[in-house]
Length: 327
Ligand code: NDP
Ligand code: GDR
Image (cartoon, rainbow, N blue to C red; front, side):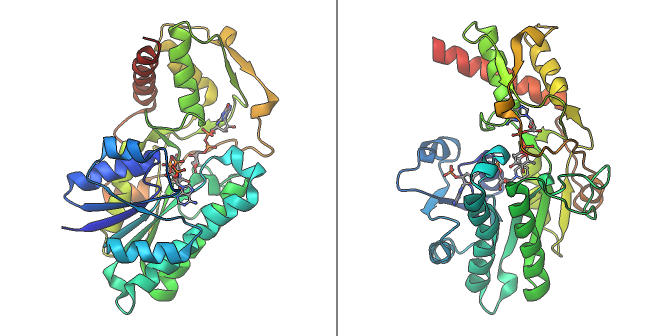
């Protein structure tokens, strides 16, 4: 039975990846932080077989202990402070967790592997946010990185550290440059879920408007369930490498509003949407669109869920969730 350790187990991707690996027959361990993490019950509900081990990405000694208990063949480093807007106000903390946390995990993994570096494979959750002020359209593995937020800068550090461990120590360490991926499990602070939750509440008559920031930014949005499959495929390759995972399509926040409101039968969403500078960022990433051709050629991976279907799925889920809350 192969064994995997996932950091960020309580997050959107951690939950989908747990389900995928359990279905493939893995024994799955998850790093969980805090003495009474409120999301412990969520993991237990979604994937009860996962064994949770306490630890924090900022504590190397704790990570070493967790690795020695889990004895993993594969390590998926998904843990991070992942909300870009939050990273400006918490730049130092974001650097410690999202940046230095990667080094901590790589180093703990190297020490756990000891003389046999081949005994473990490592996945790092890199991000399209590293492209920032994009230098090429679409963005591929060779596009110059130009991060635009403390989060993006921290991810660039983690990305290059992962490459450095691969090149310095021969570690099977791969980096997935994942573009935005969403689902009914997406945190409500991110724009897709914020919109689908609000649209459901408007339909039910319990909310009047949505307050948003920049409506013109464009993102390449895919389905999280598809993207965790790509993570697993990367670690099954004979050689470690870096891969862009994306749909190759881009949509604006306005497109998102069109699809979400159409799914509750509203053609004109303008009366329901208000813009507020509070949700504008000090520096914006205007356009992201990925070129996933390497992932397609080498991993045989392609996205299964299209943008429209994804947003409709999220609205339907939120309608069910919100109706249950008001009942
Ligand atoms: P989430 O925000 O849903 O989950 C983040 C996870 O990180 C949570 O489990 C959180 O735990 C954990 N975490 C936060 N701080 C620490 C810490 N100090 N020590 C250990 N764990 C910590 O993110 P996603 O699931 O959406 O994303 C997974 C990874 O992929 C992240 O690294 C993200 O930056 C990256 N990524 C995500 C993309 C996306 O579109 N979703 C795209 C590209 C990259 P807790 O519940 O305790 O807070
Ligand atoms: P992003 O996702 O920053 O791309 O990072 P988010 O959904 O937060 O923002 C996407 C775009 O929407 C614009 N926007 C708003 N965003 C939020 N959250 N709230 C609003 O009210 C709002 N109004 C407009 C933003 O300005 C932005 O342009 C996500 C995270 O999952 C990262 O961890 C990951 O690395 C990247 O995707 C790829």
